[in-house]
Amino acid sequence: MDITEHSATADGPLSGIRVVEIASMYTGPMAAQYLGDMGADVIKVEEPKGDLTRSMGPSKTEGMGAFFLTCNRNKRSVVLDLKRPEARHTLRRIILTADIVITSVRAAAAERIGISYEQVKEYAPAIIYCHGVGYSEKGPYAGRPAYDDVIQAVSGLASIQTVLAGQPRYVPSILGDKIAGMHLAYAAVLALVHRLRTGEGQQVSVPMFETLAAFNLVEHLWGHSFEPPLAPMGYVPVSQAARHPYATTDGFVSLLPYSDAQWRRFFQLAGEPELIDDPRLTTFKARQQNIHYAWDVVERLVATKSTQEWLDIFAAEDIPYAPVNTLEDLVHDPHLEKVGFWTRMTDGTGEPLLTPNNPLSLPASPPAIRRGPPQLGQHTAEVLAECRATAAGHRAIADSADQSIAVRTSTR
View 1 (cartoon, rainbow, N blue to C red):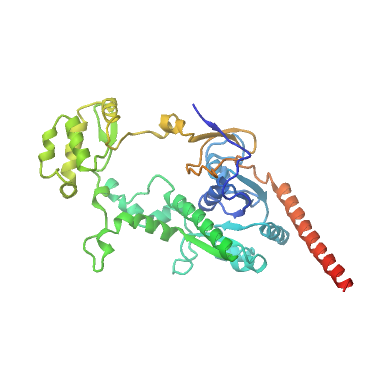
View 2 (view 1 turned 135 degrees about the vertical axis):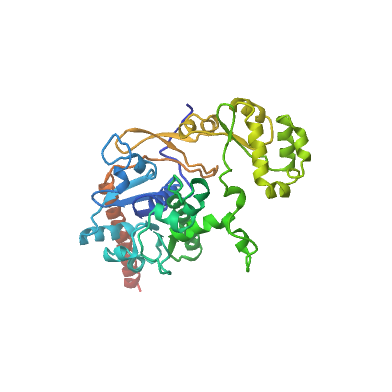
């Protein structure tokens, strides 16, 4: 397997930017990991028990569960018990060296431990404070606890699955957490650009409910895009139980001819070119109006050959197709191997790990995995020493300025 070894020296577009992460589970940690991949120095502040995901999934070392490993690379871990005043004072010193704070602590709890935006901006007015929340603080749901299942339900995503299961179902992925994490990372970068232009810090808020609702409605707002509505909500072609990979003689294949030319070519390859003259299949509009008939035709034709036969046929054709991979298949997928998708690294205990690389391509300032996920509190002493050195440097600059002023005054 062609797996790229990680580089500990690569710089990224956010090199020189420091991020303080005060978050657990997935949304906040994922956002911080994206920034870390882009070169930011991410300091993960954890309570003495550590991020809850440290105990989730298989592990070789206590506190280094599989779930934690997937969203906490490129970070340094500092343990602080923020219930204690001295720990909150230490956190303040760390934040004073930072550009961005990412937190998912609910507003009331943040206020109690002194890390609300209003409290932080008093001593760090230029800070970019990124708050991942369940619901916007401006609405009646503000402050409610929110996890992925709850957000899938309230955003309409679970209801959409009714066509498949006969009742609402959750997507088997923490989709809400991941989408909110992506939005939180890009919102942080936008706020950073604003600060570079104006010098102003600000509070950034990314609510999971609104974020996933907007995500769902891209195609499903449909007729309600107009006032009054011209049609019900819901994009029919993707909201049907009949939409699924097609069965071959020995497995399944994904196939989606889209343009008129692709449909014509598919019918030729399937041995029934006369189907293109069927008025229900001739044009895009006709196929949309007769979507179930079109699917039935494809299903009948695909069922005549094996999976490999179809893959061989489509390989030289401009028709969208793909094998139906299992998750395990991805580890050996030839395309992913060729593009360096997989990275081998070690975690904070020295255990070898396999992880997906950051898929973005920025040739001039590429993302990189510079360090594996940290052990709990692995970098506490290191980070606090840096804070002391930074404070000493600030004092030396101030003393030098004072001396310069004194010299200029004495020579007048």
